Image (cartoon, rainbow, N blue to C red; front, side, top):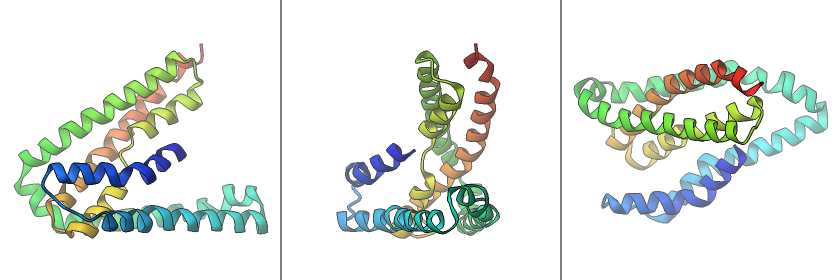
Length: 193
């Protein structure tokens, strides 16, 4: 996961800039850099500082078993509120354009399954234990839609087509990832031979 985040920090701006130019959309590098700073760097710095302070004052056991779990209910509420707000702006478009939604969703579903299959399969062939193979498959298949949603909203607004595409990504990713967890769990015995 750390490697994934580092790649995003380094490759995000050039990749997004290239893809936007292919679609004749010109967004300054400074805007893309600001989105990286606001949505990745700042939270990363706060998390590092918080982790160090909590470990220094209360220990790593407290961090892992009490501090982090105490935020579970709040993170779920935050995610649900974000989705409710986005869907309140995008709901009519989703209902009015089912074919467009399907055309966005189908490639995302196929990509997620394909990347999971490649990553999970390579871990199996490399004889990695299940405890490493399953998270590798999940992390590889994850699409970081939370960053995409944040950037789309900040650049194009809540009711834009770009935000709609990222919302469809969130709609697709959650059930697909849950299905992949079920698939990975059903294959655990194949790793423990």
